Length: 335
Length: 261
Image 1 (cartoon, rainbow over the protein chains, first blue to last red):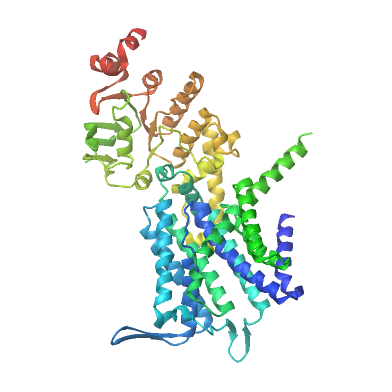
Image 2 (cartoon, rainbow over the protein chains, first blue to last red):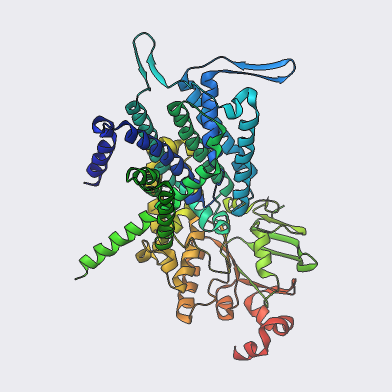
């Protein structure tokens, strides 16, 4: 029954491009999907290990830049007579590189913050994001700085000369994002339902007790950071080859804040939380715009809604709904 | 270096916090299979000694070893992996998790699956999870919390919380269990049933190092007792010897206790 319901939902979400004719609406859904992937990845750290990565956008941007640069090719002069150059590579290889490089930078962050928790972890991640942003902005030879990387190729898959699928249309990009999001969701579910996920929760809830029963918390914090960073990188990769232009603004702090809002309002530490929060705060600005409300008023409504959610549902929408559902079930059973 | 039968060997342990010497040159042994109690007034250094044995603080001097393996310099999680597991003086559980999940977290060392196998969703992961669920249920039955398995830990009454702490520690399959004031705050009925549980833990071959102020319990369960005062070991021996030791009476027990017996 539950499985059939899930399958039905997934089929519905997958079928959207078949009947939704408004291309702009499809674009909004794609961008929301990319943000949901990023929010899910942030939730693995914030919701399960309890450590807030306020520089999460760095992993997103690293994925976007790395994938773009590998598929565009580059040539940089590191020393007067030392030139590193790369011929343009297929997009799928760029995508793999983007995800791997984001995961590696997550490993570095996890390793260097092996002893820092709470506010100090926040500082490490914020600083890291700022450093990466400055590099993207100022290393003109590699990143074009504020001029942005243009003409990033779209993904092409297939056997050359036989059949080829180019991800140029909105519908194909939608399915790519949908498949990636689903994959990330399944991977996170496997992780949090396992000894690794329990070790992360143990770190969040009571670190001294966790180590007393033999949990090597650092190892699992690093694992969470790597997986989280790689998934944020995957979101960045999808973004780069869909929008096909990447500039240093992908590192803007507001994007991390948006991810945090999605995770916290939806319910951190729950799997559905970032999806629900991502849908609400991803689609809300567009819905308000469609309602032809003045731009200033749009953001006031956005902010007020956010405050209301945090004030009345401090644990987030998903845990609150669950509690309400359970309460209803038990009162229905009582008389 | 370990003489057969010596489980835990603490040699010339010294602990300092700034200018304060909390533990001053103490040595004692816990033999395999016995229950050794550390007693003494508050501030005598009992919990500090616990923290040093389990790796939470670094000693200023001295050596600690277990079954011939040096513990000093190891991290708490590595010490737990050697079979030395502790509980905490202040109630310490994973408060937001269910009772069952608390114990399952405690089973961490009993599980083997690596991250890649977990991400790949291999069948061995599901098999291990089923095995862990069985082990958690067995431990909950052993401490008498089976009926509470689905409850959130924070909702348990105090006495059951303390049992849950022991259950989490037992899940790590210790061969040496360090209990820090496990019955403080318990009523006499709860204390009596805890003493019975301690007997069953012992029957499983687990060596116990106990810190406790409840003298009735200490005298009832201990094979040997070591008494600390102001960071120094002032006496050690059987319960009968300790009860009659003039220095222990003066520093800790008081004459009242002796008369009552």
